[in-house]
Image 1 (cartoon, rainbow, N blue to C red):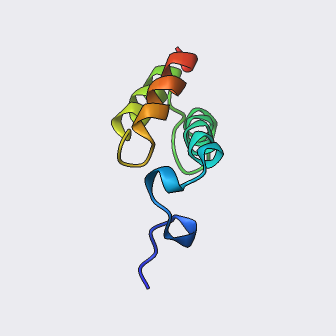
Image 2: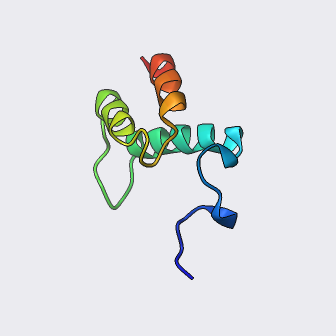
Length: 71
């Protein structure tokens, strides 16, 4: 069985809204927090990375809304 990283094989809007929002926010916090395995990204770099992954890792509609809040 191939693992996609999404429990129960859910995709797109099948994934609960709260989970899709959490995914974006969690990624932003992770990117802008100190970690032993990588450098901290600036606020602007993290926003660009999230935008770059809109439609790939993150819900593109939610990315737009979250980015507006972050700016």
